[in-house]
Image 1 (cartoon, helix red, strand yellow):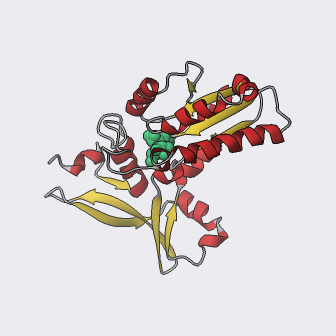
Image 2 (cartoon, protein in one colour; image 1 turned 120 degrees about the horizontal axis):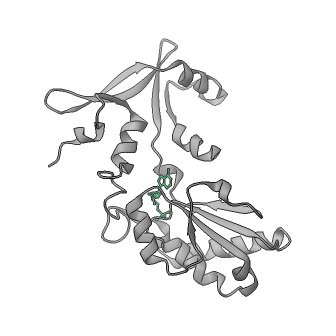
Image 3 (spheres, protein in one colour; image 1 turned 90 degrees about the vertical axis):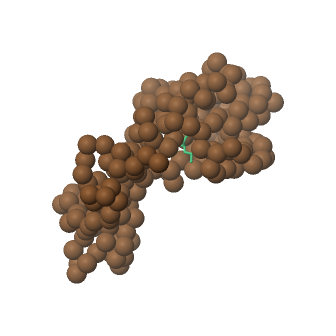
Length: 218
Ligand SMILES: C[S@@+](CC[C@H](N)C(=O)[O-])C[C@H]1O[C@@H](n2cnc3c(N)ncnc32)[C@H](O)[C@@H]1O
Protein backbone atom coordinates (compact mmCIF):
# COMPACT_ATOMS: atom_id res chain seq x y z
CA UNK A 1 0.00 0.00 0.00
CA UNK A 2 1.30 3.46 -0.91
CA UNK A 3 1.88 5.69 2.10
CA UNK A 4 -0.68 8.43 2.61
CA UNK A 5 2.10 10.87 3.41
CA UNK A 6 2.41 11.44 -0.34
CA UNK A 7 -0.66 13.66 0.02
CA UNK A 8 1.42 16.11 2.07
CA UNK A 9 3.54 16.69 -1.04
CA UNK A 10 6.34 18.99 0.13
CA UNK A 11 4.70 20.08 3.40
CA UNK A 12 5.16 18.62 6.86
CA UNK A 13 1.85 19.91 8.16
CA UNK A 14 -1.39 20.93 6.39
CA UNK A 15 -4.79 22.27 7.47
CA UNK A 16 -7.65 19.77 6.94
CA UNK A 17 -8.97 21.46 3.78
CA UNK A 18 -5.58 21.66 2.04
CA UNK A 19 -4.76 18.06 2.94
CA UNK A 20 -8.10 16.85 1.52
CA UNK A 21 -7.68 19.03 -1.56
CA UNK A 22 -4.54 16.99 -2.32
CA UNK A 23 -6.27 13.70 -1.43
CA UNK A 24 -9.25 14.41 -3.67
CA UNK A 25 -8.00 16.62 -6.50
CA UNK A 26 -4.24 16.43 -6.90
CA UNK A 27 -3.72 16.12 -10.67
CA UNK A 28 -1.72 12.91 -10.39
CA UNK A 29 -2.72 11.11 -7.21
CA UNK A 30 -6.10 12.63 -6.31
CA UNK A 31 -9.19 10.46 -5.78
CA UNK A 32 -11.13 12.23 -8.55
CA UNK A 33 -8.10 12.59 -10.83
CA UNK A 34 -7.18 9.03 -11.57
CA UNK A 35 -10.44 7.07 -11.85
CA UNK A 36 -14.23 7.30 -11.77
CA UNK A 37 -15.26 6.69 -8.16
CA UNK A 38 -19.00 7.02 -8.94
CA UNK A 39 -21.38 4.36 -10.26
CA UNK A 40 -21.90 0.60 -10.05
CA UNK A 41 -18.19 -0.17 -10.30
CA UNK A 42 -17.11 2.76 -8.11
CA UNK A 43 -17.20 3.47 -4.38
CA UNK A 44 -20.55 5.25 -4.25
CA UNK A 45 -23.58 6.08 -6.35
CA UNK A 46 -25.34 9.40 -6.89
CA UNK A 47 -28.93 10.27 -7.83
CA UNK A 48 -28.37 10.74 -11.62
CA UNK A 49 -27.19 7.12 -11.75
CA UNK A 50 -30.15 5.78 -9.79
CA UNK A 51 -33.07 7.03 -11.88
CA UNK A 52 -33.55 9.18 -15.03
CA UNK A 53 -36.51 10.74 -13.21
CA UNK A 54 -34.15 12.78 -11.02
CA UNK A 55 -32.58 14.54 -14.02
CA UNK A 56 -35.85 14.75 -15.98
CA UNK A 57 -37.50 16.68 -13.14
CA UNK A 58 -34.55 19.12 -13.15
CA UNK A 59 -34.96 19.52 -16.95
CA UNK A 60 -38.64 20.39 -16.58
CA UNK A 61 -37.84 22.84 -13.76
CA UNK A 62 -35.27 24.59 -16.00
CA UNK A 63 -37.71 24.91 -18.88
CA UNK A 64 -40.44 26.30 -16.59
CA UNK A 65 -37.92 28.79 -15.14
CA UNK A 66 -37.10 29.94 -18.69
CA UNK A 67 -40.85 30.38 -19.32
CA UNK A 68 -41.24 32.24 -16.02
CA UNK A 69 -38.47 34.64 -17.11
CA UNK A 70 -40.52 35.44 -20.26
CA UNK A 71 -38.69 33.01 -22.59
CA UNK A 72 -35.49 35.12 -23.02
CA UNK A 73 -33.50 34.75 -26.28
CA UNK A 74 -30.36 33.82 -24.35
CA UNK A 75 -30.44 31.29 -21.52
CA UNK A 76 -27.43 29.61 -19.93
CA UNK A 77 -27.12 26.48 -17.86
CA UNK A 78 -23.94 25.67 -15.92
CA UNK A 79 -23.43 22.30 -14.28
CA UNK A 80 -20.91 22.34 -11.43
CA UNK A 81 -18.98 19.07 -11.06
CA UNK A 82 -20.68 16.90 -13.72
CA UNK A 83 -19.03 13.59 -12.66
CA UNK A 84 -19.47 11.08 -15.50
CA UNK A 85 -21.91 13.34 -17.40
CA UNK A 86 -25.02 11.23 -16.66
CA UNK A 87 -27.15 14.15 -15.48
CA UNK A 88 -26.37 16.46 -18.39
CA UNK A 89 -27.01 13.65 -20.90
CA UNK A 90 -30.56 13.20 -19.59
CA UNK A 91 -31.10 16.98 -19.63
CA UNK A 92 -29.95 17.14 -23.28
CA UNK A 93 -32.29 14.28 -24.22
CA UNK A 94 -35.24 15.88 -22.37
CA UNK A 95 -34.63 19.35 -23.89
CA UNK A 96 -35.04 17.87 -27.40
CA UNK A 97 -38.76 17.46 -26.64
CA UNK A 98 -39.01 21.27 -26.25
CA UNK A 99 -37.58 22.55 -29.59
CA UNK A 100 -37.83 26.28 -28.89
CA UNK A 101 -36.00 26.02 -25.58
CA UNK A 102 -33.57 23.50 -27.06
CA UNK A 103 -32.52 25.84 -29.84
CA UNK A 104 -31.64 28.80 -27.58
CA UNK A 105 -30.20 27.20 -24.42
CA UNK A 106 -26.44 27.15 -23.92
CA UNK A 107 -24.81 24.50 -21.75
CA UNK A 108 -21.53 24.86 -19.88
CA UNK A 109 -19.72 22.35 -17.69
CA UNK A 110 -17.41 23.30 -14.82
CA UNK A 111 -15.08 20.47 -13.84
CA UNK A 112 -11.81 20.47 -11.92
CA UNK A 113 -10.59 16.94 -12.58
CA UNK A 114 -8.80 16.53 -15.93
CA UNK A 115 -9.51 12.81 -15.78
CA UNK A 116 -13.29 13.37 -15.37
CA UNK A 117 -13.23 16.12 -18.01
CA UNK A 118 -11.86 13.60 -20.53
CA UNK A 119 -14.46 11.05 -19.51
CA UNK A 120 -17.25 13.64 -19.87
CA UNK A 121 -15.99 14.54 -23.36
CA UNK A 122 -16.24 10.85 -24.27
CA UNK A 123 -19.71 10.38 -22.72
CA UNK A 124 -21.36 13.58 -24.00
CA UNK A 125 -21.86 13.59 -27.75
CA UNK A 126 -23.53 17.03 -28.08
CA UNK A 127 -20.95 19.30 -29.72
CA UNK A 128 -22.61 22.47 -28.37
CA UNK A 129 -21.71 21.67 -24.77
CA UNK A 130 -18.72 23.74 -23.61
CA UNK A 131 -16.32 23.29 -20.70
CA UNK A 132 -15.43 26.49 -18.85
CA UNK A 133 -13.16 27.58 -16.01
CA UNK A 134 -14.27 31.20 -15.85
CA UNK A 135 -17.95 32.17 -15.53
CA UNK A 136 -17.20 35.67 -16.86
CA UNK A 137 -17.04 34.17 -20.35
CA UNK A 138 -20.86 33.94 -20.23
CA UNK A 139 -21.89 37.36 -21.48
CA UNK A 140 -25.58 37.33 -22.37
CA UNK A 141 -28.74 36.17 -20.63
CA UNK A 142 -29.69 34.65 -17.26
CA UNK A 143 -27.66 31.74 -15.90
CA UNK A 144 -28.83 28.71 -13.92
CA UNK A 145 -25.99 27.23 -11.88
CA UNK A 146 -26.68 23.78 -10.56
CA UNK A 147 -24.76 20.79 -9.28
CA UNK A 148 -25.46 17.50 -7.61
CA UNK A 149 -23.13 16.71 -4.72
CA UNK A 150 -20.81 19.55 -5.73
CA UNK A 151 -20.48 21.71 -2.62
CA UNK A 152 -20.34 18.69 -0.34
CA UNK A 153 -17.36 17.40 -2.36
CA UNK A 154 -15.32 20.53 -1.50
CA UNK A 155 -12.92 20.16 1.44
CA UNK A 156 -13.72 22.09 4.64
CA UNK A 157 -11.69 23.63 7.44
CA UNK A 158 -12.13 22.49 11.05
CA UNK A 159 -11.66 24.63 14.16
CA UNK A 160 -11.92 24.09 17.90
CA UNK A 161 -12.52 26.73 20.57
CA UNK A 162 -10.55 26.31 23.78
CA UNK A 163 -10.82 28.99 26.49
CA UNK A 164 -12.22 31.36 23.90
CA UNK A 165 -9.20 30.94 21.62
CA UNK A 166 -9.64 29.41 18.17
CA UNK A 167 -7.40 26.58 16.98
CA UNK A 168 -7.36 25.04 13.52
CA UNK A 169 -7.10 21.30 12.97
CA UNK A 170 -4.08 20.29 10.87
CA UNK A 171 -2.60 16.98 9.83
CA UNK A 172 1.02 15.99 10.15
CA UNK A 173 2.87 12.66 10.23
CA UNK A 174 5.31 11.00 12.63
CA UNK A 175 8.55 9.14 11.91
CA UNK A 176 6.59 5.94 11.24
CA UNK A 177 4.54 7.81 8.61
CA UNK A 178 1.42 7.66 10.79
CA UNK A 179 -0.86 10.63 10.19
CA UNK A 180 -1.62 12.67 13.32
CA UNK A 181 -4.06 15.49 14.11
CA UNK A 182 -2.57 18.64 15.58
CA UNK A 183 -4.27 21.89 16.50
CA UNK A 184 -2.52 25.18 15.69
CA UNK A 185 -3.65 28.65 16.67
CA UNK A 186 -5.93 29.86 13.87
CA UNK A 187 -4.58 32.67 11.69
CA UNK A 188 -5.80 36.21 12.36
CA UNK A 189 -7.60 36.21 9.03
CA UNK A 190 -9.47 32.96 9.75
CA UNK A 191 -10.44 34.20 13.26
CA UNK A 192 -11.80 37.38 11.68
CA UNK A 193 -13.85 35.40 9.14
CA UNK A 194 -15.25 33.04 11.79
CA UNK A 195 -16.13 35.90 14.14
CA UNK A 196 -18.13 37.57 11.38
CA UNK A 197 -20.67 34.70 11.52
CA UNK A 198 -22.98 35.20 14.52
CA UNK A 199 -24.29 31.67 14.11
CA UNK A 200 -20.83 30.23 14.97
CA UNK A 201 -20.50 32.13 18.27
CA UNK A 202 -21.90 29.39 20.48
CA UNK A 203 -20.08 26.51 18.80
CA UNK A 204 -16.95 24.94 20.22
CA UNK A 205 -16.27 22.83 17.13
CA UNK A 206 -16.67 24.53 13.77
CA UNK A 207 -16.61 23.18 10.23
CA UNK A 208 -16.06 25.99 7.78
CA UNK A 209 -16.25 25.71 3.95
CA UNK A 210 -13.67 28.31 2.88
CA UNK A 211 -13.18 26.63 -0.54
CA UNK A 212 -17.00 26.56 -0.95
CA UNK A 213 -17.17 30.32 -0.33
CA UNK A 214 -14.34 30.85 -2.82
CA UNK A 215 -16.35 28.95 -5.45
CA UNK A 216 -19.46 31.04 -4.67
CA UNK A 217 -17.48 34.24 -5.21
CA UNK A 218 -16.34 33.27 -8.74
C1 LIG B 1 -19.35 13.88 -5.68
S1 LIG B 1 -18.95 14.19 -7.36
C2 LIG B 1 -20.59 14.41 -8.03
C3 LIG B 1 -20.64 14.13 -9.51
C4 LIG B 1 -22.00 14.28 -10.19
N1 LIG B 1 -22.55 15.60 -10.02
C5 LIG B 1 -22.98 13.25 -9.71
O1 LIG B 1 -23.98 13.60 -9.06
O2 LIG B 1 -22.74 12.06 -9.97
C6 LIG B 1 -18.27 15.84 -7.32
C7 LIG B 1 -17.92 16.42 -8.68
O3 LIG B 1 -17.47 17.76 -8.51
C8 LIG B 1 -16.19 17.92 -9.15
N2 LIG B 1 -15.48 18.99 -8.43
C9 LIG B 1 -15.10 19.00 -7.13
N3 LIG B 1 -14.51 20.17 -6.79
C10 LIG B 1 -14.55 20.95 -7.89
C11 LIG B 1 -14.13 22.29 -8.18
N4 LIG B 1 -13.53 23.06 -7.26
N5 LIG B 1 -14.35 22.78 -9.40
C12 LIG B 1 -14.98 22.01 -10.36
N6 LIG B 1 -15.39 20.73 -10.16
C13 LIG B 1 -15.18 20.20 -8.94
C14 LIG B 1 -15.59 16.53 -9.02
O4 LIG B 1 -14.46 16.32 -9.83
C15 LIG B 1 -16.81 15.69 -9.40
O5 LIG B 1 -17.07 15.71 -10.80
